[in-house]
Length: 501
Image (tube, rainbow, N blue to C red; front, side):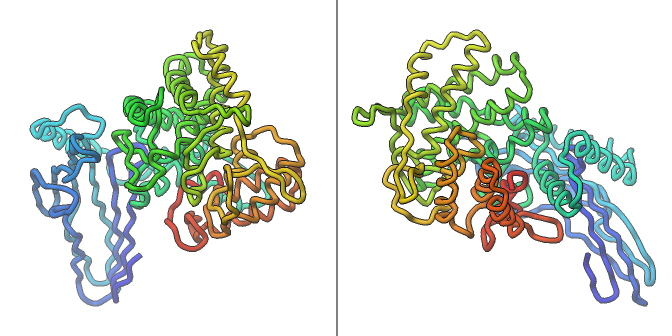
């Protein structure tokens, strides 16, 4: 809402739910003054630090633009083409004392996911993009709004989370689910980024956030949505094979920061790109949840198992047998708690590796697939070292070898209880939660805090769970319940926290 002296303007923008290429803008203007006003909109992109213009046309009612990104995601990778077609007035006379409503429709096309890469071929991209606009103009503006609302209603009503007794809380759940779903389309498998589509946070890259925090809800609510998020990983298998080879490992190793190409995009010299290897295990864990939810044997055999088995090959090549311990160790890794830097035997990483290996064996048995290294994988899984130590009240799990007592920014040990659901004796589980909640940065990421809340609930400690659970509301920005990464600072629209929070 803009209030400019005697002119009130409401500008509504939405990406159409039913038509993936369509952006709709509706402008409602009320001129309360005694003079006529001309409302002028800025023309579409002409000069940019991100795109070069190949061709463009401009009139008061119709605009077209065809361009190409100035930079590729990685060297020697094609630079995507982008086309836009726009219909609607750039100027509108608002007579004195009158109201006026008008719309601008824009279709956007891209060569991402398109095999056509030549300039001539992308002239046809412009033609296709404008052709889509011509078809939509026939439908009419009010009809477009109705179909948009109907599509969203169907998506939210057919698979959602409901509750009674606290309308405010139910609204927070629904808004969180909406923000997640507004960030991707099931038929466009390009993953989720922690900052969603509304910010450039995290450079738009995909992290473990997708597979561990954001995607699992769709294994229960929307199988087509879950498949889309898994497909993003499956389509980048060749890049994961290449990375594992570069790192001297067998199998596959997914990047910590992934984009269109699937190659490692973590800015150097940050160590997490090569050493935060739990991300590959997190992907397998999401595949496990999806498989349990769908029982889709054909999908698992054709698509899931080739990824799962290759991650297990990576784990088997990454472990080191420790004669003193009589167990397998995993050295030189960065745990989820990135404040730790490079460490040996991250509790989360080691447990996840063991779980992945057991799941590989389980799937092989269910599908009747012979695994040549089954005996070795079983030995590693059953003899994986997980660091522990004694404090005055008894034994606890340690975050990693030689933890120095610093304040942590991620609840690594808490994650063993949820989302990994590792069987732990009640006494140790209780001490783990009590110790590590006191070591966790109170202005950190709510992913950890929510793991503590669920851990306490699983132990029947509802009062302690409530303390952790209530921290989530400090991460919500009213009035629309948009999440922020940290209580103070960090990124806004942090969709990683939406459903898990």
